[in-house]
Amino acid sequence: MSDIPVVFPKDPKWREEGTSRIPFWAYTDEDVYKKELERLFYHGHWCYVGLEAEIPNPGDFKRTLIGERSVILTRDLEGGINVVENVCAHRGMQFCRERHGNKKELVCPYHQWNYSLKGDLQGVPFLRGVKQNGKVLGGFPKDFKTSENGLNKLKVAVRGGVVFASFDHEVGSFEDYIGPEILGYFDRLFNGRKLTILGYNRQCIPGNWKLMQENIKDPYHPGLLHTWFITYGLWRADNKSALRMDDKFRHAAMISTRGNSGNKNEVTSGVTSFKEGMEIQDKRLLDIVHEDWWGEPTAVMLTIFPSVIFQQQVNSVSTRHIQPNGNGSFDFVWTHFGFEDDTPEMTQRRLVQANLFGPAGFVSADDGEVIEFSQDGFEQKPYHRALAELGGHTAENTEHMVTETLIRGMYDYWRKVMEG
Picture 1 (tube, rainbow, N blue to C red):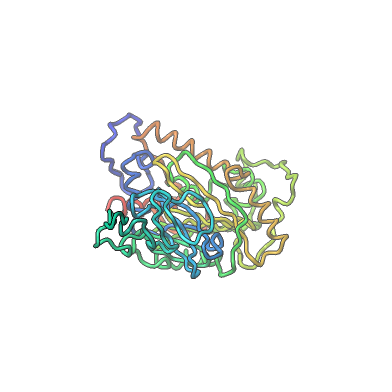
Picture 2: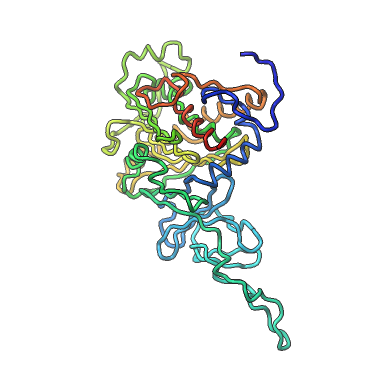
């Protein structure tokens, strides 16, 4: 293919058939990014907000993001779960500044408008004006109704202790949204046991938000990029594996079972990240104990489009929340959790194994770096394209990792929504 620069179109179109060649402008164009926010984050989709375990008590709240819009997850005084937009109905102030806390009500500091934890407007200063010399001065018009001026309330879905929300109240059920097969893997992890929060990591990655979805839909890079995975067999191309998508190809599960590989030389020969002589000083990092809820797989990476990744890598379990903050950057928030019935030993095991992941994790640090370098390449050649043709040109479930089928599937869905 010729690499002669062409004029970058003001209104870019995906001119090639299929989704195995992804134009670089899909990662760099500002107008495309704004359209993604509207069509993928603010309409027609369920987005991850948090875990019920983050707001266990009445009055607890958590400030977070859907796309670029700030929202507040609350547990109201009756114990209900709510998500409201963090924008005062009066003058538009983003009034909540704390990340977590406990309140009996939500108050905007600018003019003291007061809301319940459900988002209902409860009180307005000077609603009926001020009496002075027998006269009433100011006040809101008689037709002003507090019932019509609450916070913007989102539609909420809670399943297995996980909270999703949507600005679009016409969106279908969460269960229909992710489909029966992906729902099975979701329920495998969030099976009704009460969750406990172990900690958070937070990082800003200078790359387009879709690159993190791609990264966890790319099953063969771990055995090439990540020294830990290939050297200790945690995730290798010859492990028993399966790739599954919903019927629209937007969500995916990458499933791997450690310990049943064939001849390791077939997948490690010539791979520079394989370090045969590498030894671990802290043996607890590989102190892996099989848990009954796993079934056979030792790892399942679940991507729910567009906003979240659910990770189970042996005993380490976490959510990874994608929060776009521009066409070439996103915040990435990890919530590491366990289960209320974990033994102290299992909790410690989860914490130790979590060191493989997060911004400085022995594995995940690699991903943040290659995403940054990819974005650098896209910005340098916006007229070019990425190639995702390993395993063919189409999207389908497979029983192996040597394919880019999940990436092609995601862009099949992306094209239908963005070009429709």
